[in-house]
Length: 194
Length: 226
Image 1 (tube, chains in turn orange, brown):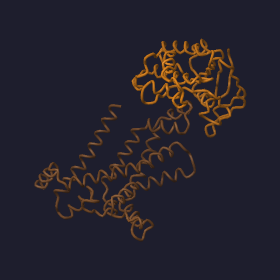
Image 2 (cartoon, rainbow over the protein chains, first blue to last red):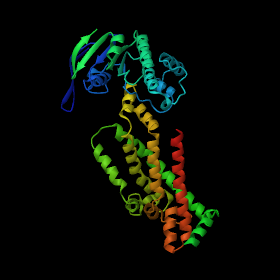
Image 3 (cartoon, each protein chain N blue to C red):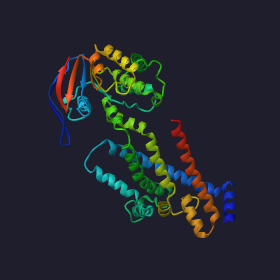
Image 4 (cartoon, chains in turn orange, blue):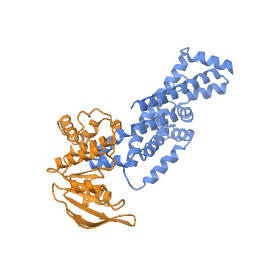
């Protein structure tokens, strides 16, 4: 539950949300024009911007154009597990890559894969850490139709364990996949739709 | 002049004991001082980039200013500390290789730190956001930054190497240009040229160029292959 969220870049208020509630294991779409505050909201929810007051614990944010670290796909997907010093990393990486349809991609260099594959590796890198909330910024913006369909499938698959909040311009994608749509306009919630 | 070049080339391949000693001394001293400077300057450059704190701008400006400091001034400052009347006079390390290493480390330190700091500011901001969102703590961020910015760091180290191996002031003032002890490529070139003996100076100049080009070539290959 978020109440009275205000955020400004210098003097310009870019977000002013009175109340917003997220339920467990649901998919939320945030729709709005460029500059409406979608990315800012996601980053605040992840604690990357503003105070930690509105941070959702155990949430992971995936950029619109995700950045992969240098090295291999394995290095990227295993990163979070390694810093948590978890066991069975190899198996978990394999499972995560299978979930996003990138089996046997472990040894590929991250610089040698396509935009859609980068998006999926970034999602695998986030999902492997089993976040309670996955925050996706424009997940369909730079990918082909096939990857969009795959993304839909992935989000449906993880729905019973993870709440997904994604920002998008794509009304059709949002309507198809989300349980609730949040319309943002100039930093304010314009409308909440099912 | 052509005669001098001929003699220099002959000297280059003749495995002359003195030339070999001078080159090895230069390399040993340079590598040692760059390693020591890197140990302190690389973390400083990374911390300056990652952290926001009071006096940060002041420190960055100070480092930039130090980069422009002439080598003889650094030599002079360290000389006053290491001479008999200086605060470290009892250590008796003036005119030893160690004194040169101290001076050269001070010389390389601000350059490496500044270059690491400046280089990291060019890293994509998504890199640090991704690390944070994946739960990286300060230590993880530090380690990941070193890995991700390895070419930036390596370039800074090589710039430090270039600055140190080519300097004369520190080596001359703190090492004293003692034959078969503290004589380096640059101090030898200065001495031989002042004597009018160009052959050894030219030979050492050629070696200096070969070292610089080889290092750049290896770095270029590494970057290309990675």
